Image (tube, rainbow, N blue to C red; front, side, top):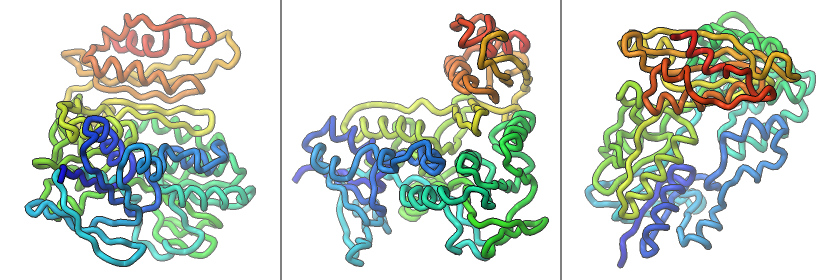
Length: 441
């Protein structure tokens, strides 16, 4: 008998690692336990299906279970939920949910890619039929059907993070009357408060009633109940973030760290012959050098590439994360990378922040719009620590310039002289990133 790789979880982390291992090891037996009915789908696209920009939910599927089976000889077993891992015996016990039986399978190598789950509050009414999540393709299909019928009707979105922002946009595009509830004092708590205020103002401009410092306490038919009052809501969408699915790993004896995510080394190894990648495991932040947990598709796929290479007998390392992310709310683009001013100070760094206002194109060119760039750097060394951008279309992807400079360890003074492209349809003569760096200097 040859070696067997057993994969727990059939989305980005698990399947990308399985594919990488298969490329390197045609002889390896690969079995996947996936408790759902899908593999490898783009959950990040769900809000855009709900809003109607992506009409076909099936287009979000990157690779079907049958494709993995026929083209890569990967034995994908759907509706199999792993319930126990015995690291000493090298076995995994799973529940076959279709047949209601338990199966036990041995492994030589194990890939733990269980991802994350949406935060599900313990509120009265959370199970009512008009309450929805936006986590799976099944959620997406149901929510898109509901959204198409919400023009002029009250919709409550609970949560001020990425999902909350994007779902609010989706229902605005459907013509609904949207109220967005955030327990925090700002939207997008991974931005500094001054930059988040720009996002709040953008939400109000497109008709979203933003309720900050107002946590929901319960849901009733046709309304939500908060700390401050009761609001009509024919549809409620909970987008309160996600939590890593690390409990099964912890129960097996694997170490867990930030928010219960699996601890891995720079090879994505959690224990001898056991690897993990994606939203279920932690990373090292490249700026602070400390463990962090960042649930992003980019991170999951890159970690899985490393895990797959090593499972296949190669030698790859994952260099860490910056938390670079981007989203939008209608015509306002929002992006961030590295540390915020608040995060830098909490990390004990002597940080200086610079906020610069500019325009996305030459001031005279049609389609020009505002952009605000915030840079954070270390006072004495001048080392760049992070950046945030809020602005009109064309603003957001400039975060990649800042992320690249941050990855390379540049100072804000280095950033001044970066040779960035210029033409009136794309940028002023001094790109807003250069301008912010000039101001920082």
